[in-house]
Amino acid sequence: MLLNHCPIFARTWLCRLLVAVLPLWAACRPAAKEDATRQAAPVPPAALTGKALAARHCGGCHLVPEPALLDRESWQKVLPRMGNQLGIYADDSSRAVCREIAALVKTHSGRDVYPGQAALPAADWDRLSAYYLQNAPVAPLPPDAPPAPRKGLPLFKVVDPGFRLSPPGTSLIRIDATGQKIYLGDIHTRSLYAFDRRGRLLETEPVGEGSSALRIGPQELRITVMESFSPTEHPSGAVLSIRNPGGAKAYALLLDGLHRPVHAEWADLNADGREDVVVCEYGSHAGRLAWYEQRGDGYVRHVLRNLPGATRTQVHDFDGDGRPDILALMAQGQEGFFLYYNQGNGQFREAPVMQFPPSYGSVYFELVDFDGDGHRDILYANGDNADFTQALKRYHGVRLLRNDGANRFEEVFFYPLPGAYKAVANDFDGDGDLDIAAISFFPDFQNAPHSGFVYLENTGKKDFIPHTFPQSVRGRWMVMDAGDLDADGDADLVLGSCLMETTAQGKPYEQQWLRTGPSFLILENTRRPPRKPPLSPP
Image (cartoon, one colour):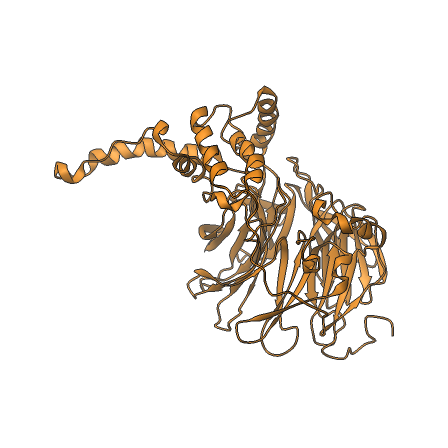
């Protein structure tokens, strides 16, 4: 999500604050010896190097990207868009388009994403651009090659239920272990499908375009719907309720007016006995992270972060005070993890946990105690490559971030996986440690096409053995879920395929996906014999 949403207003506000406060601070500070207090004169912008200009004009919005993050050709595509967010436009036409978008975004969020005035002179912009173009590699730096995955999954049996939509557009896949069901949301048909444990279709429900999250209750489904899978500034997303699924249904609209919501987390955040919801409104230029307080007559919104790119949250008491806190993953410009400590009375305090460069492509995380020390670690996948360039990136992959007990996180494991989209942890093989299953939506189709799915077997020695399966190229896996689908006491996997227009590197397989590609596959865990008939026919 490279530099899509650089909040210029934040940098401008900070500069104004410093201009106002620093003279007052200098006037009030005690006098000291002249030789100890003499300060160097400020460096005029015209004398700053391209690197220094990048730090000045980009560092207030996000981590300053290093030139090596992208190749030269990619920077040539990205830099003009960076310039737009600094008020620099190639011509009057591009200015008009950007300013029209800015007006719409300002209506929804109060932010000016495309300023009318340039933040720096043209000569400075030229030096800043030259810094990236002259120091970027000519070709993308190749990812470090992990051990080649072993072909074959001795632990899993691949089951194709035979359900396929052309093209497949699976945006949601969920295992309902209690009900022995699979739920699938499809973008193109705008529907939610329910299947039995063997993948036989039970019912179809029209819900809208882009189901993204599903809360499964005893007598209710709560579905989060983007309504527009493609970027848009129109707040048309919603959270729907279907009571008594499978019977005489009752429908309700819980939330609407959302900016492309991609995740929802349900919890009582203010200890009033009612279940609230945290919604990641990923948006486009306009978006937000907010929690919605349930009251007797509906929900009241409380904004936690008024920026687009909210990707996923998990609720957990991180500081041990008995109140649920919120860990959020942000993408777009300000990529990283932000922890919202619950202060009580519905108030939260934001604390940045980890920040990443704006090309990291953050997609997914989950909390898991990997080392058994009682503290939640983070399993993190970054590989979204659906921006201006789809060149393989050496920093895309699966990471384990260890919690030191004080909510400081350190990377202790990295598996290079271009296009990584999700990673889940479970003791799939029953040996007492946690294994990892991962999918990639943008794998290296030319050299490692089977890396669309990788099972990382934990050897118990801080090492993992990668496995995949020959049929992994039959789909383009965007979503995945783990759960005990057949009630035999071990975790199965379900993979969901989504065929989008962003498939330039997947051309060798595109026609195959269109003609015979399944909407989903089941990976049946065979560690224990099922208590019921197996998922696949005998």
